[in-house]
Length: 218
Image (cartoon, rainbow, N blue to C red; front, side, top):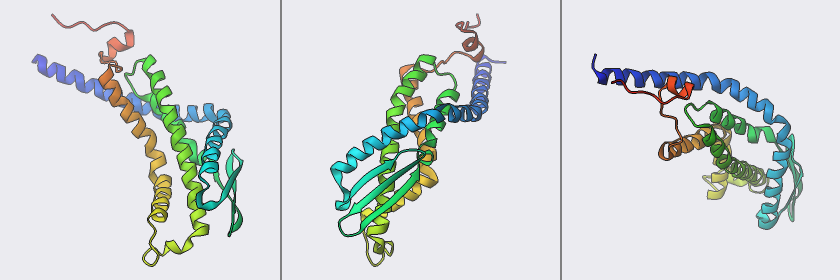
């Protein structure tokens, strides 16, 4: 058998091993991280709501005053509008943030990443999730406001409003797909960054597990 065939077979074996390890670790890691970060979610929720409150205080969308009255387990807010009066809204914070546990599970399950680089990935990924959850909350509030203030735009063929359509489309897309895929997109971008910076452990599986450098055949 030629060395080329041996090398190709070894590469395929490594890829299969890495794939199965990833799948076997991902599900229990997701369950474990969901339980571990559960007690910390109220603190994280307060941070997200605090930043969102400051932004809404500056923007005053549609001339309304929006005040968050609760951050966890449901984010609740009150809207005071000059012409529409007062209304309330809420959304489950777990619905906004469950993808954080999925991201942590991905960081745990991705194979062949040096331990120090996993910490770097975590520190660079968490600000992205904070920004995502804050933006998602703001657009959720905006979507509910538009429903009460501009219901005529649902009949878009008679009353077209690009912002109304964009917000409603985002809201549906976020619930159905974006929240679930965002952790994978972030992890994929970070993984490609690791390939360029040498953060991936490229040693054969046996050598990587033992911590010893591989030896080439003489």
